Every structure is written in C-alpha cells, then in structure tokens.
Length: 115
Length: 117
Image (cartoon, rainbow over all chains, first blue to last red; front, side, top):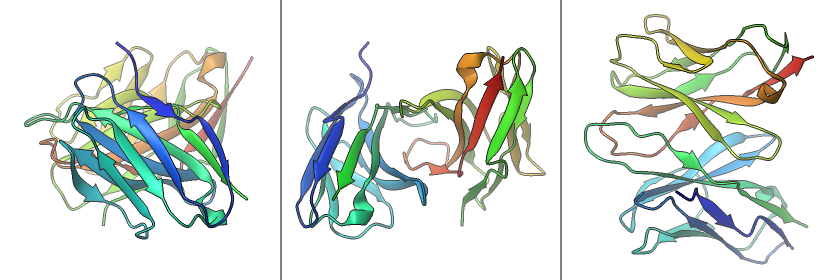
C-alpha cells in the first residue's frame, strides 16, 4: 500500500507570493492533518480535514488555508508569504472512526523556503 | 490546556544498550492517546508506538516499549538494544479523546538521540 505523498518536496518562494502544497493520503484514509515544523516553534498543528470538511484548526493566521477533495486528497495554501513561514510542512493521514484511536501516518514533508 | 514536555534535548547511548526517553503530559480529559514518533534527518515522521489512557498494560512494539505511569502523567519511551539506525529525533505526542473525532496531535519539543558504535 502506498504511503502518504506530498508534492512538491522542496519549494523556494519570495515574500508576498502565495504557495499551494499538496497531500495524497493513504488509500482509504479519510482524515488529513497538516503540521508546520520549525526549529523555534517545533511541530504545530495547522488544521485537519475529514470528509471534505475542516474539523479542527490550530492557531495560525487566516493566510493559512486548506481544503480536501472528494478523493481525500488535500491542499494547503499560504498567501502573502512571510520569512517566518519557512518551515517543513508535514501532512498526516489516518483512517479515523468511532471507538478507536488510529495512528497518523506522515508524509515526507514539503520544505518551504521563503526569501 | 493540553501540553507535552520532553525535558531531554539530546541523549547519547552506546550501541546495544537500552535507553529511556522521557515524556510528561498534561490534560484534563480522562480519555486521550499518547504516541511516539521517530524523525530521521530525512524529515519523515515514523510512527513507533501508541498507548491509550485506559489501556491496562504498557504498549510494546518490537524493541520499543512505553512506560506508562498515569498517576505521574508520564509516558516514557524505552528502546532496547539500540542500533545505529535509531539515531534520530524522537517526538512524544498526545491526542485528546479516544473516539477518533479529532486528528489533532500536540507534540513535545523532541529529543535527539545519538547511538554511538
């Protein structure tokens, strides 16, 4: 079974631009979560989508947004990029369901550099 | 508010020896799950082990075991017979609730483990 895939793996953008990152979850997984990892702040939860609906949201400005498609693939968008947005963006998928806690499987991440 | 604390920024261990990575947590929810992930230099987060708050026994997965002390709110990871490939960053994480209604994980700051030959 293929793992979580993220594209692109590396990205360089300049301040003020916008960027879209893509995540394809493991087949059958309906929940997709996004995390931002920086040396200073560590791993922080951005948002989670389940069945095309945003179910949870972290404490990030409105410049960060996302969506999920009917095939569970998810995209996140960052508008008006700032230098501080430079980070590793990780996507995770899980089956989700009632009665159990399912572990999240992470993709390799997209490393975004803002210059 | 839920919080995960990993107090060891870096650890060294000799190959073939056991090592314990500390993790304490804080939550007011009686139902929660605790996770450990490994992150090699490549960046991908690898799931290692899971412990639910109502689980009676400590979780084990191969060389990994979780020393779960609920009253002390600690969930330490024990790696037995360390291997050079275990050198990585290790993260402890928590999710509140057990019904799978949320995928939000709260992570600790991580512990860098280096295995010496």
